[in-house]
Image (cartoon, rainbow, N blue to C red; front, side, top):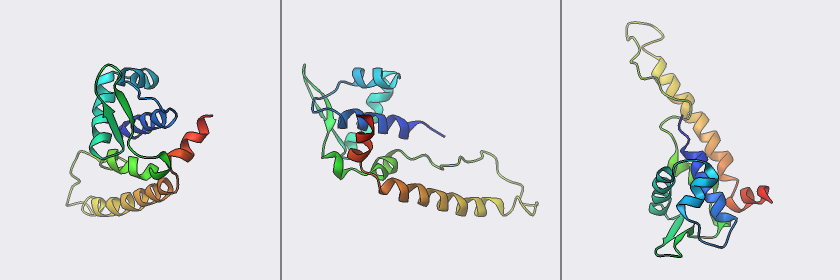
Length: 134
């Protein structure tokens, strides 16, 4: 598992709770991670149209659209891990009855779990999530 979703949702929540632009250093301080990690994720969020940046001395980052228009599933789809439950690095033994079938059955399970996660996140917009922080 990776922590990209938690970092991205933290960034987006911070940006949602202010009308000001925020610096990557400020955001990194809130998340308690290196600013390089934050800038990398901000770049990804900008690339996908959820965040915009302002250059210069009073520059920083802000949401590129109203928080009510951003679903948590939008954020998840940008940063989602390869597999929500993790993937084994080994190749199962094809001579074993379980080994030759496990990948197919796990893939079906992973697809079902991910569909459930996306369905849940699709029902929550960023504004509603941000209201939890008042």
